[in-house]
Length: 496
Image 1 (cartoon, rainbow, N blue to C red):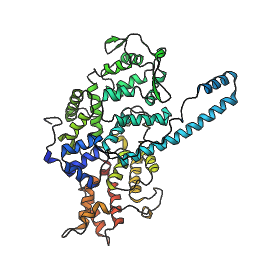
Image 2 (cartoon, helix red, strand yellow):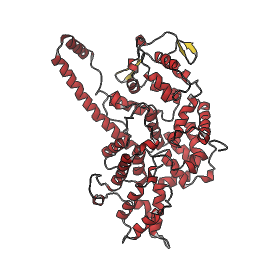
Image 3 (tube, rainbow, N blue to C red):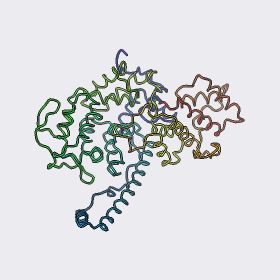
């Protein structure tokens, strides 16, 4: 690659390139949406996705959820609990324990509702890149509900990621995340005091959020960084700084001495060379190549992204715009190479085929079984992605999910033909009907295989699928749904 991220020539941006852009920078689209994006041309198509504020978004707002379910006890109630503990009053303590358990059950119900809301938003949004970046930041600054135990705090964090999805990484996201109640609780910084420093947030801030494991910091920097983060806590739903818990004494971070606080710590982190490289590399893994490689053309591409990142003073949008305009992004070796995450698999199928969502609860449950439960990454490292998405168990669920979306059949049903299809695949191929002098069955198979798989397979399946259609009296909706069920069960369909 002579010029890393050199722009794709404008005349080389066509239907296939627009489809690739829409899959990677969003969640796919219908054939008509792909054509519309292609007609814009490369620069306008990229800006249409990257500068999403230009697009009105009718997706459901996060309204109607309660912020009060897990609110702390009122001062009078805290005094009652303390008095009951001193007096051994188990009856009073039991009342409070039961009330807390009921609040926890209510909060778990609300968390399921919020999960469904976000999944619906991913399906409905007119700003697909904004939601995809929100999903990226959710995995980057990974925070799980089971540890936070406050659905409102998880929703606040989700809205924070969406608000700054394309903003300034240092000023908006990193300075913001150390003030986020969900993150503070998840990494125990509410327990970080000058008498008992807790290193969790300081460690992950460098190792997983900004610099990368072992890149440009020492164990002493973690200890000193933890002291800089003392006093950073929250009260109810708001960030709070507890001056009494802050260690105001001198610290030595990255070879420099001073009475550093949390914001100083962040600013010092961004003076480390690896701060410009780590996040672009993760963006490259998310959008281009999900391997862990850091060599060859990948290194040259990420080096270029890194220079743009630093030159733009840590702004995210210039990096995305440069990547999505580059010939490297559209290179044949980088197409259909990412393994779809469970959320990508489900949302892309609905958005590209136009199937009904049927049951958001079931889709959300299936995504969890496949390894990606929204608001519950497996650890602070987030989802590993790549080949970790695929095993014998998850592949079976993936195939069942697509059959469910296409046919409405309950996966527990014995005969999949028994499901009543209320969705029509006809709009996908209506333009191919009754073309004079054409083989309709062959045209439909070739068109749908390109739509679903990127390109027709060369191992005989095209011929088999064409024979399947020719063997029917009419190519009706049932035949089309059967064909799509076979195509979406293909290994190639697991790739984006």
